[in-house]
Length: 311
Image (cartoon, rainbow, N blue to C red; front, side):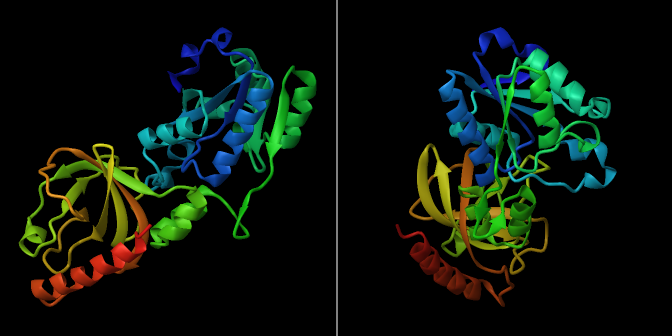
C-alpha cells in the first residue's frame, strides 16, 4: 500500500481507474471491510486500483473541544496494516483543519474527488455524509455524478446479530469488557502493542512472570480492566497467555498497568515489542488477602484460559 501525506503527493496519472472511498475508518471493522471488498470488486471490473482518502487528525479532535477524551480502536500503524490487508492500494492522508472543514460537499467532489483523484467510481457506506456540516449524502452524490464523469455505489447497511456495526458500538463493547462482542463486530481480534518495560517483578516470585506493556499512543482505546485470555505475538510467533489490565490491587495501587503472562515462554524481552490479542475476558480484577491467594487464583485462571484457547 502506498501512503501519501497530503493530496499533493498523489499523482493521478500513476493510478489507473481509481475506485475511491472516503472516511476515517477507525476500527476497520466488518462494515468497513464490506466497503473495501466492494471497492476491490469494482476495481477488478475496470482494471482499476483502490484509493482511500482519510483525515488526520480525526475531525472530532479538531472541531469539538469536548473530544479530548476520544480514544481510537486502533493506532494509526495498526489501522494502516489492516487497510492494506483488506485491499487498499493507495492511502491519501489529508491534514484536517478548521479551514478544510469549511469545504462544501460540491467543492469537495469537484476539486478533490474529480479533479485531483480522477475518480472513476466512488464507493460509500449506507450512512455516509461529507462536506461542510456533513450536508453531502448519497442523494447529493447521485445528483453530482450526473454532472461529473464518475459513478457512485452505495454499500447497504451490514448487520451482525441484528445490530448495525459502528465504531461507537465497538468502543462501548471494549469499554465494558465485552471483548467477544467487540471482536465479532471488528471481524478480527482487538489488540494492543508496545515495548516491554520493567515492572516490580512480583509475578516472577509467585511463578507467573509478566511482561509489562508500555502503550505510547495516548489516543489508543484500552479495553476494560480485568483478566483476559490472550494470544501474544513475539518475533512473528504466536504464544498463548493471560493478560491483566488494571491497578494490581493486591500489590499496588499505582498507575494503570497492562501486563501479560506468556505460557511456555522464558526469554528476556525487555525493550522489545509485543502485540497482544484479546480473545475473552474471564473475570474482574480483584484484591486478594495475600500473594498466596493471588497465586491460587492465577492457577485457576490459567486452566480456564487454556480451555478457552484450545483449538
